Length: 276
Image (cartoon, rainbow, N blue to C red):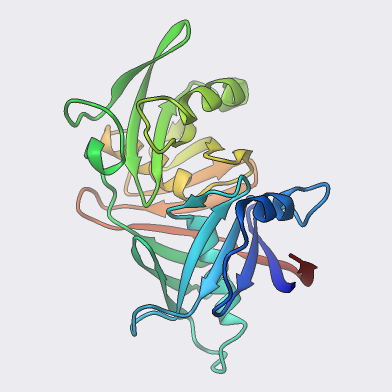
């Protein structure tokens, strides 16, 4: 079967977007083959667009990591979907979209400067909501890995995240510690692992080891998780620039009970077809 796709990225966090209609999602082996950067198209996530489930939505989307497993949310992916839809509506002046996924609805806005903002869910800190194994909710937790104990913040912004504050991200052992924490037994569904360096109250530097992917050039929900944890421990303001290897995102969060806004570029690279 021939499948049409659009290759997109947000700060180098790259996606294959498929407007699937009523087609079935390819099996995991096929997804892994398509995601391979040497023998397939190559992507961090595949964004599978289906007809809306709710009358208030423009589209229903699913997110699949390069390992073939389905993810709960993707902030940069949602921004790319909004950019994708903006190029396909009859009304070229339309700038707002409602994007439905299994966790709810994401509101997206095409900004005047061409960047794309998405309103993600209210962060969840309760361990059972993340999920994370802990007897009670705390601002930070001690977690054991071989030969050391780390202090992490944990939160869900549609998918599970752990955030470690480091003195300098350039020297952070992202691959080693990221792999150990991603599959740690205290994260039943695994987790995305962010390494955050606080520059000042309005600026952090970040590297992210994504669940099922490895280190990526950018991670939208990772940027949100880092800002939310940094703000919850009193180190960050309510609007923060998050500097990742692929570029900069802006994250806004007023505090507990509020949704999170993520803003940055979303770029179309090319369109094509592939045999699946």
